[in-house]
Image (cartoon, rainbow, N blue to C red):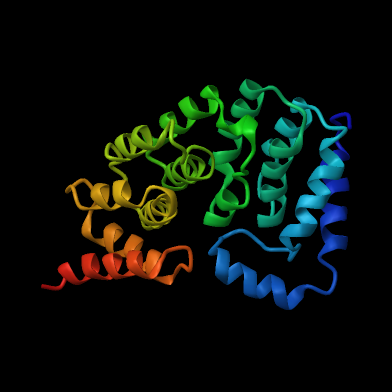
Length: 239
């Protein structure tokens, strides 16, 4: 797809068509994703399908041009992110476009739906980019980093480095803390003792620690014995 003045308009038409009859969903989703943007009401599976369809014939320049359009809808901005994920791009080009995408987002969903678990996103360049984003002053950029580390780097080779990197986070925004709690709860599935030790070593604030334990308690991925240990750690907070 060549960049031209009609590219944006064509995409908006496609989005509008996909959202037909979804008015109630759009109203509901706007509250859930907590966005200040307009919400057309395209469901995420439809956005993913459209992104795959468009990305096969879309260049980095096309995506970059789409990202320059101001006052786009929530759905439009998310689609731009999914185009980065699905387009045939080398890592550095995809990272450069992600740097252009992140300032456009205003919702946790713009991050969580965008981050994808793929082998290509577990490479060194993406690791370095995630660490760079941890130092951002933008709440959702830091959330992007945490979710990226959780999605693609919670493995034997990286787990200690991930925990070490998270200790340096200074942003205390709600969406950062929620992402951290999510990461710790996820890490505990495969690194149970290591994760609980990290939660108890004084580097994690009480709110995030308790939220991580809450997420573990709500999960079915832990054994009864592990759930007993989790509950005992939570109880300590109230003694």
